[in-house]
Image (cartoon, rainbow, N blue to C red):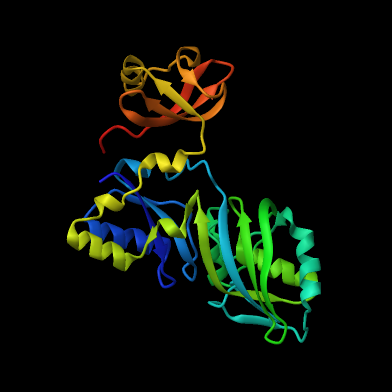
Length: 299
């Protein structure tokens, strides 16, 4: 079985747990996922089956969208409700103060990754060090914010909801705490739901329970999304039948001899007869199609 299933990840599962469940439900070994979600988070988790697992590390659309619910006035060691309270502040923010603080983050900023993250420092995961009570220096990294909106604010309860669209490497729980600190308070996530990832939305998703029912009826194949859905935003290259055979045999093709919509950069590759075949990169200097990853072969 080759293709993509979007799973609405439940809050009591890690992303790896979801992959393991899908393997068990479908009785299929070759399963991977794109875009890890924290265990407490829910929402869009693209899951790749068979030959589609080859695109796990080359997804071109790295934008993700989240709905984050936040509690003001306290901080935790994990920056979410799963951690231990480390600080309480007797500060009450107004909606105006919160919106003014948010203005400093529009477009993006330099973000310090949290200790509870999978980033490696000196060969060790930060979350492993954090669990040992060790804190190390972390270099700030530029993160991109394409959309940041306050959709709800409860001044009495000191809670708010953010809608965030961001680029790769952004920690939304850190963003929420940083905004609160800018406004003079502290904060932690109470819930996080991913509503879009790599161009897939909640409307594309199945729950694990729905997947189990479909598998029992033998109807999973009809729900599979084609692998090329992950690359719809890329320019296309079209190959003749002869060129398609050459590509499958590892020959680097000349861009001048293909029908191209661009002269450089990442592209999706189609055969006039076969349909979607691969992704690759047109090199302007060499004039060749390079870094090709085929999706038309057998696993």
